[in-house]
Image 1 (cartoon, rainbow, N blue to C red):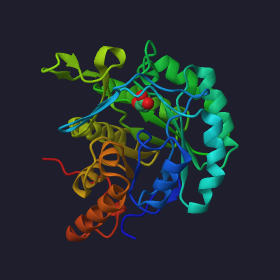
Image 2: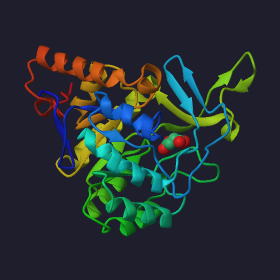
Image 3: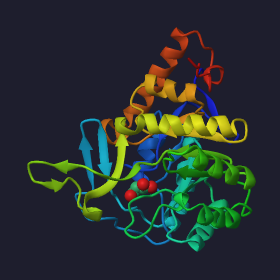
Length: 308
Ligand code: SIN
C-alpha cells in the first residue's frame, strides 16, 4: 500500500493514527480506535495514580481548533498495562504514553511498560496543563535526567512527545539529547501551552483551569508543528522516526507534514470533532494526492520539501 510506513522499525499499515489526547482513555474508546483506519492504537498519557483531571469546562472547540486543559485524566498506568493484551487481537501497534509527575514516575512506568504487551512507549515530556508543574522538555537538565534513567530499561522503542520550540538553539539541544540516549521516535508537537482565549460576551476565559491558560490545538498551531518536524528532520534524519502532530484535518495537511519529513501524523482535534472515521478519510485523501502527484509511496515524498 502507498501509505504504509514504519516508526522505529515497527510497521504501520497507514500514515495516520490518533494522538494521545481525546477519546483514548478507556478500553471501549481504545477498541473504537483499534477498529478504525488509525494505523496504531495510541493510549491516553497516563500517570502512576489514576487522575480525574482538571475542573470543567476544560475542552472548548474553537473556529480553527480547540483549547484544552484536561489535566491528564486517566486510569493510572496499571490499567493501561492490563488493556494491552486485550488490544493485541486487532494486530496494530499499541503505543503507551507516559506522563510522570516526577522523574521516578517516568522510571516506574517505563520499566513496567517495557515488560508489557505494548509495542512502543511515548514519553510525554510536554503536558502544559498541570498547575505548578512546568513542561519537562523546556528544562534540558531535567530532560536529560529522565532520559538517562529510562533509556536502558528495555528493548521496546522509546519516543518523546515534545512541546513546540521556537529557537534553533533549543532544537539543537534536544536533538543532542535524542542522539545521546538513542531515542527512537519523536512526536511533535504537543499543544502550544499556556494560551488564553477570552469570550467577550461573558468577559471570562473559555476554560476554567489555570485561570483560563490552556493548550492551543488545531489549525492555529499547524505552522509551528510543521516547523518542528522540519527542524528535527534536518537535525536527525535517519536517526529518529518523526510523527507530526498539530492541525492535521485533511490529506493535504498530512502531505505537508510528509514533505517536512514526518514518517506519520497523529490526529487529536479532528478526531475529537469528527470521530474515528477521520483516520480512513485522511489516509484516503493522502493516498489520492500522492497518486495524483506521481509518488509511488510515502517514502518517495518524505522530507522532499523544495526550497525557493
Ligand atoms: C492533558 O491531559 O492535559 C493533555 C495532555 C498533554 O497535553 O500532554
